[in-house]
Image (cartoon, rainbow, N blue to C red; front, side, top):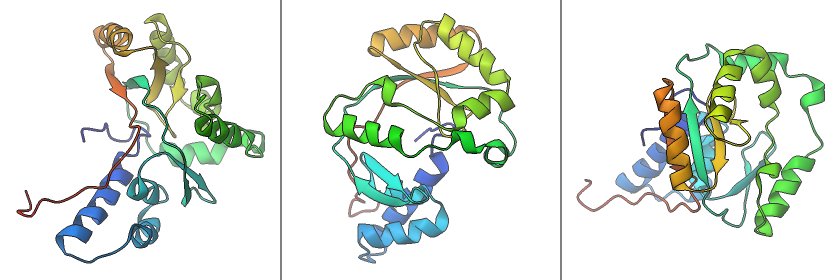
Length: 206
């Protein structure tokens, strides 16, 4: 998949989910998607999401899932800061104060926007964003470089340190990425996945 590691992009969790799906088919176990989600919960809280695929609402710990209408694909500039942050998730949870918790209003607004097909950048909320920038000042530098290169609002992916910004189209994103690469960043022009179909293993196993 070539997903950059330890960037808050779900690379490890999606590896685990893909392994479950592949072994289920290769070994002919016959587990349902729901069964694999249950197994995935023991591997990591994000794994059931990747087993299910598509646009999904997660409640509880994030592993109680409800499928939503598919979100239209978005053009995204992704920046992966060079320096990996040791124990970032543990450190961010340690400083996440009560003021960062909400009553779910941002999530409900996002769900409504997706279901009404009126998604906008205003719907994006990440409780870790403010504390991550406080804990890791180097993220400010990357953010400012992204803005100077032509992005709009810059968002933290999960617990980071990956940063992303929605852009109007592929060409605009490629111009921004080119500028960021010239500044020494690992930057990518990507698109969000609008729909996901489960892995199917061909009969010869290749």
